[in-house]
Length: 624
View 1: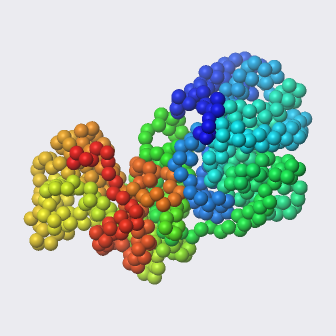
View 2: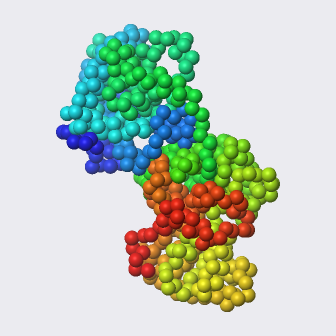
């Protein structure tokens, strides 16, 4: 929002939320019906292609968003290396408003303006007119309008909304108040309306020009430099005809320079070219990929989890997972992305953070949760994980933490497999079990005398049971196999604290994978469910409290966090398995934490608190 919002700031369909797309429905239905059922000589291909063209623009923008975030995560060739926050992500979520606006105007003009329908595929004279008008008139008018927007009166009411983003993303290019966007549309329509009125328009001209505008807009805000220097060496005048990401990035950091749309020659003419443009351009081109101190390895969960990654849809990645009505429409894309992940067998970088002089990265394995439960996938998964560890070792990474199902007992013995295969490893492999157990223990209500453990018995569950029994808290189980596994972890003095229960009366349940719906329905009202596994149980009871999976609130000094981890954790909350790797590096511990050994839980817990991580509390937890 601008600092002093002017009239027509909000978009007209803002109250509709995600249902705003339905505004186009009447035109879309009429367009498809007319093209399919009208006589062939009356069919208008131009009208029919408006919807595919709008969808192409959405896809084009999303490709830029994903590429930009991927390059930001790697850290090479960055222009502005500062933190991106949730506030900016929220402000830029409605980047598709301008596409809806354009769609409405296209449909209206197509049906009312003479000559705006039945375009031919190509006309060379229309292309020439478009180029000349853009270079000679559009660029000139935009330059002076842009300078006017930086006058205090217009800047405070409109343009400051766009400049709220110092660290730009491709979609920053179209984040403007409604009134400002209308002026941009009129400016960029000069070429299209002229070709329509002169009878020289074509589908190639219209689609090509708008795609060019989208491409240049996204490129100018992508925040990484990639235009090769040799391009300007071969054709020196190109620097007056095409800007670079560096050029427009400086406009967002300096404000009073580099006003041009896409062609910088008016900045050269009127003396507003930033003098540091060429220097920053060369510096950014030579900036190498950042080597992280800590790498956290995770994986995809469900088929649609690709959208919830930081590289996916920003509106979904920045919030805990909720069902969206439009997701079913995207199943073709979901299936395509699934096929690509099956083909692509290497990890990829999705996030880069900074904390207390540490550089952190998150890598993702292109495998889904279901694949981890199929034994015949174990070898391929272990191979990918091991290669990721060796790659991190080669880069000089200090700590490698294993998240989600990457450190299962059956899969790799809680990560011990890789240490045994590569005894020369300098990098420290951390599975985070000690911190996960410590968090669960600190979430158990004070004064509790009995808890029930239900679910798959893991290293974390055993550590929790041992600690509780030593403190004299009775630990109950419902399953004989689970009771036997836990009993093996206890010494003789604690065995009496572990019981096999036949009732569901316990009010505190520590749950892992395997908790059934039937068991949830049998518990008494007010039961507290505390997960000790990476995945939360399905919430079936409104009269019970479900705690988060082991996680903590992160310090405000942990930078560049603008997506939610694991799809279900709240904002600025990080899983225990990820935090454990960070704390391991901050403390400079020189041993692995994997296999069947664990670090001292109290030591890890206190270290986490000391570095600013906080226990995660829920608003209605006070009653416990």
